[in-house]
Image 1 (cartoon, rainbow, N blue to C red):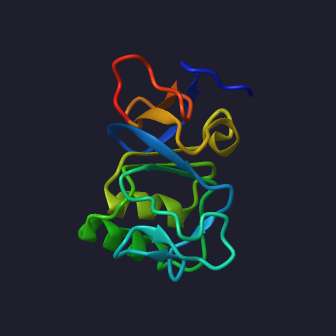
Image 2: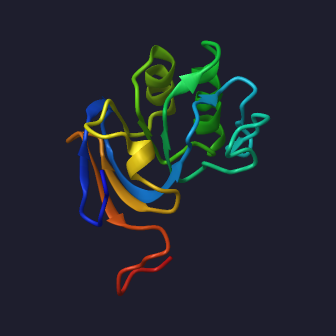
Length: 150
């Protein structure tokens, strides 16, 4: 699927809510326990494509969770420390990813009609309406509409 501004993906609500922000797209699953630093909201997993990248305040788009059931506890710590992602969009629902979204208390969507990891890019401005079950591409990375800030 070739995405253009205005493209809407539809999926299943995991946690309702609406946020607009910058997408951070991970091509790989993320390990919670030992894979993220809750104090900074940074991916620290060795050999991960986004090692050293901060997800705090961004909408995290990723295939899903990997590792132990401690995954959700690490993302809950991010919420408590103020370093959580703004929202989550994941390709496949697993108990780890779903529970992580619930305890993080951010809008989350899964099982979309197209793979969000393939459709969206890091830096895209998106609107995640997990209540309605949609993700809308508002602007491609590096493109800003007149009147918008950075």
